Length: 410
Image: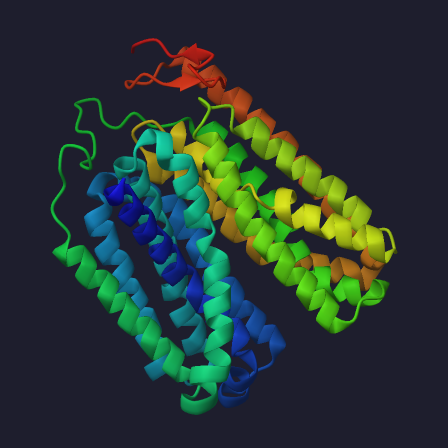
């Protein structure tokens, strides 16, 4: 268990380092834009460049990570973070150079996420992976907190570039950790078979990508605008901030609890994800009602349940990823990156066009559509398991003492 704990902590640190650059950019946007001389529209493009690069690299790089293994993938992630962080600190003297550096850092983010997913899927005991992925996905709020703390500490005294120097230094530490890591063992090495890797069905993964893109779009829109709507319905800014803090805490607890419960059953995780998304949709419908009591209760439910599925979703797809867990998780990460980038942008446009009430209802419909696609992807995975049994026997369909179904041998 001590080894598993260290692996989970390491994966969480990789997730934090990969996610940190875009939050540093967001929290320091005012001094950064003032020095480099561009407005909010170009700033939005720089943020979009980060997520677009992450999405593309996640799709393409997943299969590569499966082949080269976690050690090499860690070194690649460290190199990209070092180049991107130092690049922003040293070379970003205009908008275009900043965008180029954000593309590098977005690629680094994808490499960090894929490395963390691959390492956990190959080294964490199967009965602990659910809670492991829950802890890993809880690292993203930690990155937000760190970026927020950087402003009153380093930025105010040393300037915004100092935070990216530190990011480059952390990337170098990641590279060093990869260099010093032991070579692959029988338990961590990629499966070597004459027929190649036993890969998951691409069709199901594409549906997964669409589902998590929609779910992330709705969830991140909620996280971005829920406080502003709270002020509209009658809360003070401090009360809305307190609600956000409480919701974030419940969100972390929900992710951990969801992962722990997943470890107590054999599969049937995607229906739980779909149910959580559906509850999120119902909560957003209640949020759209202009009343303080309904707003507060529905917001807490949306955070605690409606957004507690990312770790479980990732765990579920990696579990059926056969011998290519990084490739499978790459589709999940790509969809999450794309939805996280486009959701708040489109929601803001909807608010300008239709108002908050209608926009919340649209976001609820997006949640419901995402839940439907999750169930469709599950059906596709089950069909593929029956038609193409994996090389390693897999129990699925739920059940606590034993799985409801078990795949036959290849």
